[in-house]
Length: 208
Image (cartoon, rainbow, N blue to C red; front, top):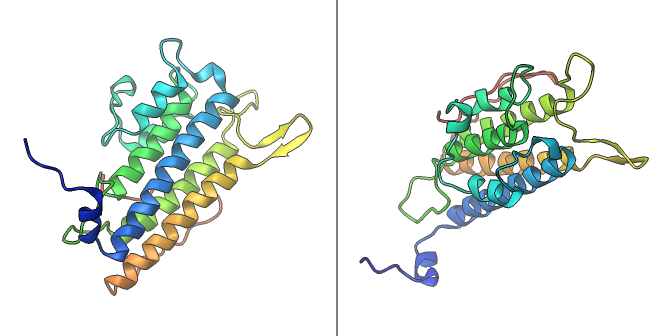
């Protein structure tokens, strides 16, 4: 059985950039888990009767998500599935699971980066941030035929405006933008900033 190096030894083999990458990755994972919990609490009807929120959160942490219950779609297809009128499955997990899968792809399905490891591609991290923007737009605007949201998120609750969902996703966007800029500067590359309108519903490639 191989001997694992203690954390303090591993940390000696990491660059400052690698620490930054890991910190952003951790924050994104935590934010996506929080988004999942918040959406289930706002949309409890979406949680399947044979599972719990805690189980769903653990499923979200897997290196590669098991999406067989949805037919193993691509991440962007899974996010769109959450707003398809004929979809009868768990819209909350489809939405957040699709986002988590995009982040996983953008970070090459890794959560740890040592000194000699290749770091994530700056363009993929940038694209992932734009994809969160697109997902946030879909969450905010998509409605059923009778005008109800497919997923309740921001809105008035007990006569108080709740915008915590947009705020959480905005933080995820900002983290990835900061990381993509740092990675691009390190590699002396220029990010391909795609011109996108406020109502863009196009998902950009992140390695899938």
